Length: 422
Image (cartoon, rainbow, N blue to C red):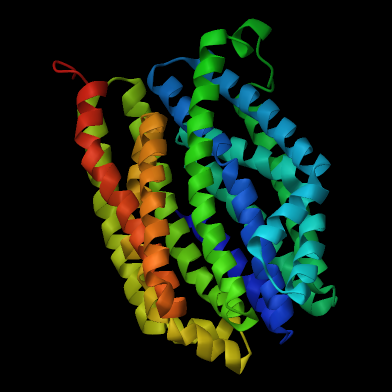
């Protein structure tokens, strides 16, 4: 959880550093580019999620060889995807910013950030794999240190390059590339040490047909599920951009509320993935049920607490992030709705972790598609209410995701743990 909390802090520092320059176009540009990267890399979040789940299940089953093989397969896949993203950077940028629909000035700033930061793609995806592998073995302290290190280096370099060196939006992108590079090198060294200073596995184990097929099927389902989730946030960003640069900048500020809450809850979802994955691999129904209860209770408490803090101190946070009076006023108009995001997302994030740990990827995919359809309907119905309607539709999307997964959960437990299972 602590590692996840440094990620929204990174977003706040980047936004605040650019925000101090006082130009809504630059703030909108870094917001648009950040959303684009969140969406692109988020699409390949299956590298972390599947690696975590398969590692935890192999650990629960006592299969140390497979623990090693999971890492090797995922690192090769992450490297291939990262190099492909770099090769396709020009059409990828054109398509992304066309869909998001920002103004000419905002898009120009976003493209500058995009083309620099994309060079970190293989390293960032490699970090997904390494962190998922460590958390899957309950080595959360090491994963915490690496993730916090990446984000702290990124924050420090962003402040220096943007504010002190005057590099502007390019400085923020360079800081991210440097931090991800350092994090990957450290993570690889840590994995090498844990595996007895030998990362390789035999070709027969690495290319085991049944395990490769299971990996690809789960990755496919998680990717489709994540694509729907990305589409929801891309639509949100696109509608913000089409409402004007001021609304886009205001929602960029408020997006930090959403990110803080989501990464806070995602930390608990990571715990659900590991605990549920290990108990699922060991075929221990009671341990699985205990993990589910524990994560749901703690997530509800933290979600409510974060929402309360945002409601009380949201205006102060807005003033810290941006110096623009116009952006401050626009952000305050939707602040209370943004503050509700953590408590509305409790069930959605928890059950995501539970379903991933149990490798119920197909069901998670189908339920996400149903929630996305409900989100599109809400956007249409709430469009007359402007930015308030946009935030309200997003909150309904979070609630719908959690509700659908909660309703399906009992049936999945009955199938996965037949009567007589311990």
